[in-house]
Length: 304
Image (cartoon, rainbow, N blue to C red; front, side, top):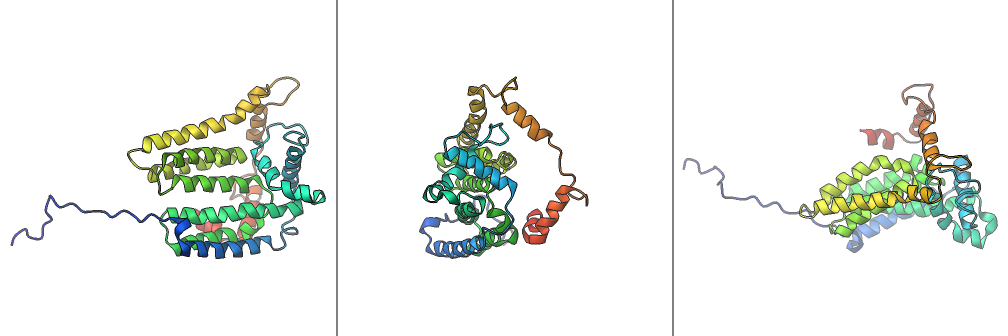
């Protein structure tokens, strides 16, 4: 009959929702993640005290953590707002028990083992995030393996850097933003944890727009405005604690006889750059070449 193959106007196509993946109740996911985590920790922990070479930044952050542990303040010298102090406060917490049991072990080489806790958390959170983004199990496992076993990761993640802690908090924020439960408190918590990541290392500010997009896509449309507004509010309020601390100490604005947050920000923003990344004689080009020496898959694949 003429027109028999035409779709009826009143026929609705039903789109089946994607299955909700509950990581904690999925035995295959748990076993796969645990197996990969064991391999990652074994590789990253091997010879951790001798490679790579101990750096000045590691010594500075550990010394500041020691000052926090000893109740000497936020640094072993005058704290001048070079970075938010939350990062080395966390390092102080990670190294507290080892420093109490064996005070002589409060050295950079030995305390690198504390970073294995951070690496483990990052690897698991990345796997959980991949599954919450509806990636298949093999793809989530590949992401976790590349992240934890890349030669570049092995070099950088075992060092006592604030960046490693900040990445851990940001991954947690993304996991909360992509929560399949879509509870409002998950999105509020994502904003809060995102602020914690920024207060750990301020360069995480550049990742916040991606976190907002993830939250928008994974929130329920009926509560999306409340979720996003609540997350932004939580992030801003927690972030304001840093300038509030400076204000209460009369160190927000420059003045005679004291340091200030404004001076610290001005110094950091006014530092001479390391040059254009494609300029063969620049410092940034040297860093890029060192990254590509250890691993070409993650940097080039990530850009692609």
